[in-house]
Image (tube, rainbow, N blue to C red; front, side, top):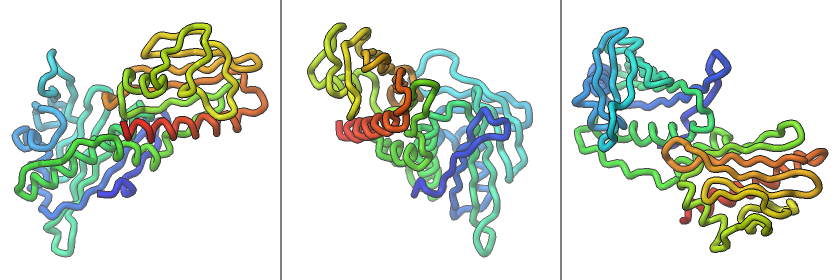
Length: 282
C-alpha cells in the first residue's frame, strides 16, 4: 500500500495530531467488525494482546508479548456494531469506522483516526499501523499475516510525506526534533566514525553541518549528548532521548544564530537528511 493515501493534521484542540488512514477491504462490514473487536481475531494482526468489554465505558487492556508488568489500559468510548469502534489507549485515542463499499456494498471502507500528542512520533505510528493494516487484510483474506517488519524505509517515507524533518527558528537559534530509525548507540557510532570525542577537542565531522564553524567540545556524554561551541557566541547540542521505540529521538539545537537563521536551518536540515540516509544503510 502507498503511504501517500494517509494524512496527518491537527486535532480540534490544537494540541494533538490526528493520523487518518483509509483502507478498502473486499469483505463485508460484519466480518471487518469481528476482526477489529474480537480479541481472538485481533491477535492475528493488532500490535498487542487485547482484553476488552465491548460497550461504551468498558475496560480495555493492552499487553505486548514478552513485556513484564501489567501493560497499558484504556476504555471503550464508542461501540456501534458494525459501524464504529473507538477507544482510548493510554493518552491516545483510536477511532475505527466501517462503511459499506463497492457496487454491491459487500466490501468495506475502513477508516482509522489515531489522535495523539507526540507529533514527531507520527511517522512511527503511521508505519506501524500501515503494517498492521496490511496484516489485517491478509487475515481477512484467510491467509496467515506475514508482513515484514519495516527496516526504516517506510518510516522515512512517512516522515517525508508529513514534513516532520523540518526544523524551526527559535529566538536566537534553531531547533530540530526528529525520530530516528536506529537507537542511540548505533547513531552515535555513525556520527563518530571511530573518533570518540573528548571535552576540549573539536567535534568529529559527523556532528558538523556545512558552513558551521565548530569550536571545542564543552560537554560529552556518550552515547546520549554532545555540545560544542560555535563562532561567535553560540553552541550546538546533539541530544538523544527516548522516542517511540523505533529508535532514538534526536533533539538538535544551535544558539547564537542571529541574522542567518534560515541559512543555518537549511544547513542542518541537509545534514540530518544525509544522516537519515546513512542510518538506512547501516
